[in-house]
Amino acid sequence: MTLALPPWRRRDWRRQLERAWRRCSPARSGLEQDALNVLREDLHRHIRAWTALDRDEGLLQARNELMDGTERLLLQRTLRGLDPDVRASVASKMPEFRPVAEDLDRYLAAEALRLDVLRAWMGLYYGDRARGDWYDVYCKAAEMRLESIGRDFERIAGMPVYKAEDNRDAAIRGINASLRLRLLQMPPGARVGRPSLRTRWKQWLNRNHEANEHNV
Image 1 (cartoon, rainbow, N blue to C red):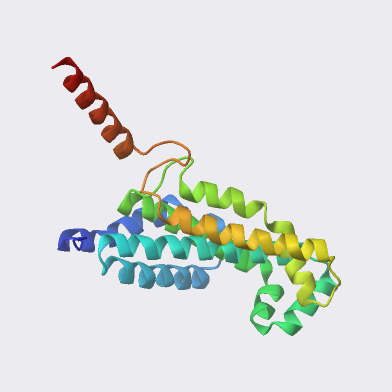
Image 2 (cartoon, rainbow, N blue to C red):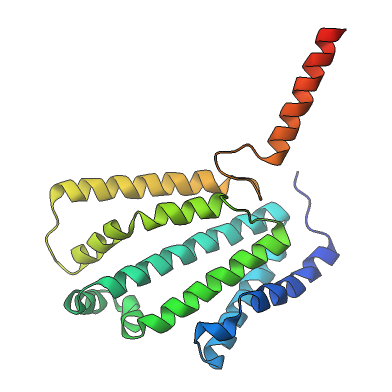
């Protein structure tokens, strides 16, 4: 059974958010103060909801939001790289992309800052940050999907796509969904491809226990 965070830890999220916000230097984002205020309020609202949950559920929701934000950033980056005619066609067929297409640099800057602050806060509050951890792996895998996302936009715009690419992109989407589920289960602070500290500690204890039994 997972215990809820103690009251002192629930209050502490505000201080950790302030630290994360300052650490990410929002003034350098190029965003106007009104946009920064909206972004900060959005983070405040999400984090307040997560920290009202027990630790495991709050962390899971925070990780999902971090992944969702990364997906949005990929979509925005890919949209910016399209030919203007293709971008206009996508925006006409998907109204939710229209404001993004009209002000891509602003949306990209806001999403990038939001991800940086959220990532920093999760490290401070949950200890959920390490070089080579689940999120680093997810970002590297996401970079490999840019061409596939571009073809998705081309499909939306009505451009022809080869059948082989249809099959390949469907496989990529399946692999990404599977990878996402696996990475969500990683313990905080663990590096992918290397046993976590807890795992290594248990392995060390087991080896010593077996050695002691052998010497008896």
